[in-house]
Amino acid sequence: MAKTRVIVVDDSALVRGLLSEIINRQPDMQCIGAAADPLVAREMIRNLNPDVITLDVEMPRMDGIDFLSRLMRLRPMPVVMVSTLTERGAEVTMKALELGAVDFVAKPKIGVSDGLRQLGEDITDKIRTAARAQVRRLSAPAPAAPGTVAAKPAPSSLGRLSTEKILFIGASTGGTEATREVLVNLPADFPAVMITQHMPPGFTKSYAARLDSLCRIRVKEASDGERVIPGHAYIAPGGLHLSVERSGANYVARVRDGEPVNRHKPSVEVLFDSAARVVGPNALGVMLTGMGADGARAMKTMRDAGSWNVCQDEASCVVFGMPREAIAHGAAHEVMPLTRIAPALIERLRSTAGLHTSRV
Image (cartoon, rainbow, N blue to C red; front, side):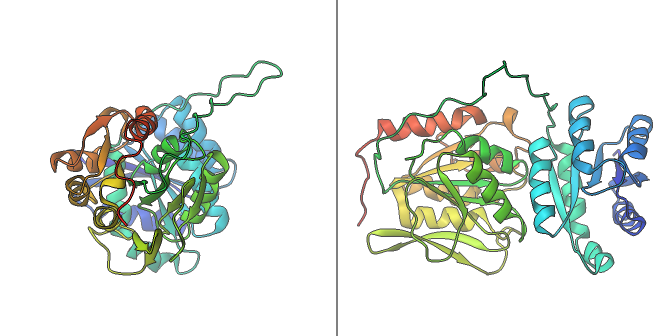
């Protein structure tokens, strides 16, 4: 079997050496080059034609974001970003995912050598996933006509059909942008949304803030014990599980530490299990792009409890793993392209107005 060929791009000689060593220890991959900056990397990519590159964010001569933007327009290929665990690093990483990076690895600020070695399995897993990902060319933004501002038409109001409904979303690789596509197309009075996106600590706050600036609903990192209300989306904090509970007439978010489930924390399984148990027929479930099977079994449990479920289709996924497994478990009522999911959710709510509105 042919090995996955990887180029490492990082201005630190230590990091280049460590990543090369981690990659070359794997029987199914090979580091075929290491570049200290994007200009050197550009020539390496042209001459060596790698399957995947790992890309540092902050580098001399051209930063990683500028290079990624050019790469995804001119020669799109799978990219795994190597980010620092800082607020600035988190914000830049979100931009990189928006530009088309498949995933990212958060390298520690101190103890880089030991930290990267401990992350070896995570790094190589993400390279494997990236090698199989569907990567799309980044379109250059079309110039706007003078005096005009480009904007999507606002989704029409639902008229607060039900405060009992909750939408539950699970996602992993490619999911940051897929979730954005769903949320920006929801009206401001949409029912509450609870989201588990596989993401490490330190990044979900920036992710939530970015979504909040783009969406008509409010988006925030979930806090333990807070009331879950319509017009708001709650994202599982990196490194913690998110679930929903009842408190009298209200739904509340439960954010807790615990063991990883399906190797993940936060886990979609945890969120979807609570949706089936607590919300039942008032739940809507969406499984978006991602590697693995996290949440597939629990999504079937949601369906058995009366939920209406949608899975993203293969053609629009970066990685079809999680939706495919949910479909195989019999969890999906509908399978559709990403751009159809928000309109389908709105139509479903309108068509079932007044049904299953209380379990108290």
